[in-house]
Image (cartoon, rainbow, N blue to C red; front, side, top):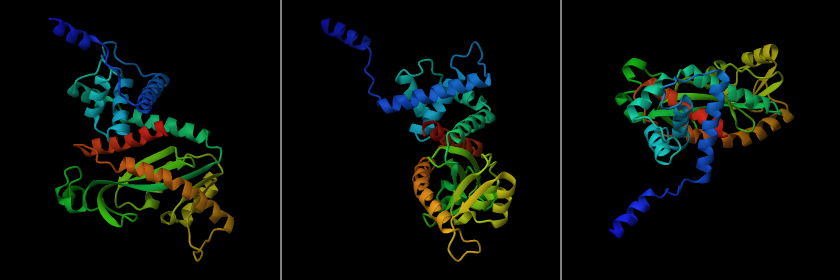
Length: 298
């Protein structure tokens, strides 16, 4: 009897959390950002809602930041460790998650981008493309997300850094000099870098500089950006190009590119993870949430 009483007392004692402090800080940061954003936009939850929209968004962003996009692991972790005690079941959570408008996610990234631009005193930005493979090149014909017969070969791209072909998407990301995302879009993998760059809004302050590699060379578009928006595109060029940069511009471009390459390599690791998705919309949304989570924690 004494042993049973001792076991009951042990079960009633509060469990000591073994969660790392850095992870706890990340979770709290994500929740506070989501809650403040929803309050600023005037979002109102139903009175009978068991779980708030800020908590639903937190589960998705924690999954993108910590659990490789696996929302079920994130849901169970946040419930078992007491972060969100009123956690919904798996099916209920999926319905609430899909009920969040995609515009709301995009607006949140826009707000973070505006904050990044306001604190970017240097006025220097960088743009680059990130390969997002859906499957290996040998499994193209068996891809369920983007069937080859329906989507054609536009989702088959080439990654120059790895010198290999892949099947999937390509992300075009604009960041500040200190590595904070500002704008992000997705295109099929075969889309050229300069074509994806033209699709960005480029809502940047006047007299801004955008650093890029040689794949973004387009003299007409450079002139158009400089005349209409006062934005200077500094694409890396060789000395024998038609418009070689002045020595001081070449030095600035190379020095900033070295700083920014580290950030892009980190983002590539985040986006290069295998995401579990059933539909193309789910895949693209999870990729977008990965960038959003990176913007929150950068």
